[in-house]
Length: 338
Image 1 (spheres, rainbow, N blue to C red):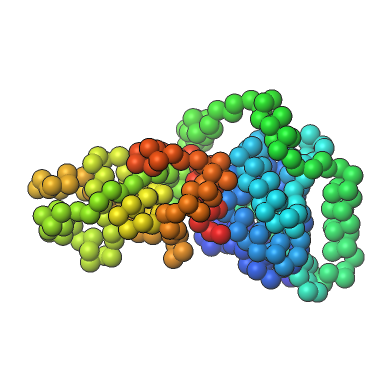
Image 2 (tube, helix red, strand yellow):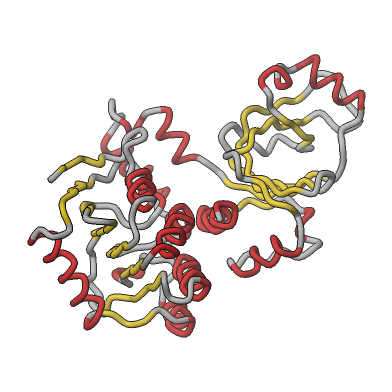
């Protein structure tokens, strides 16, 4: 038996542990009280790959109406596309609050349990804590945990359907964003010497998400001015005219690059207002691609994927900058990870 602590600090996150374990597993039985679109979007590509090798079963709940309908739709879509190899059910218990992930592959069983749900914060926030236990699948503990899940699955759940999601959405109250309350509580507690006040955590909490586009190439004069006034070329950043100072460092952007015919997920590395006017304005943003594969061709297949994930974007809307919610970004990230 091997026991590890997952404290969601640095690279030691539940997201990293699930990715590593899912790469070796053919079965996952997950119990997560809450699901959010950003959390599901992060793990969905890995769940799909595990389901292709075996079976993924997920039980989530409606406790306090925290689970997001958009997250349930993501899971329902994956359930249909995998022909049930990835299957989702809803707990009948309205106080269902479990967080248990059981992964099996070969003769090994990995059990992760603690405070983390399938949400963005649950997967990566330093406020969470989990224990990973790895042991042979034949041990009594492993068999007991699997048996408990089977009982819940067979008698304590209902199938996730489009109709269920619609009914839930109608009765679910509109929940105010918790940011003002968090800030108020932070003032009550005072400054913290720990992670809550660390630069990395502050950037994570203040991160913003956007959809933007480029419609042409910069003029030669613009290229010369930006090259003279910044070091972006030396750093390997690509840049474009933002026509305003709306962006800040660390923002994430879904960029429709029409001249090249690509859609990319990028992170803002720097911004500037040039001292010298240019044919393309004076406000520019420098970016890097988020990941090596965070790029997709702008074609009918991509627009269909956006529609399938509840992100229909009309031709007129494609050339308008929009700020996105964290949930919308989660769905977008899932498309690019497939």
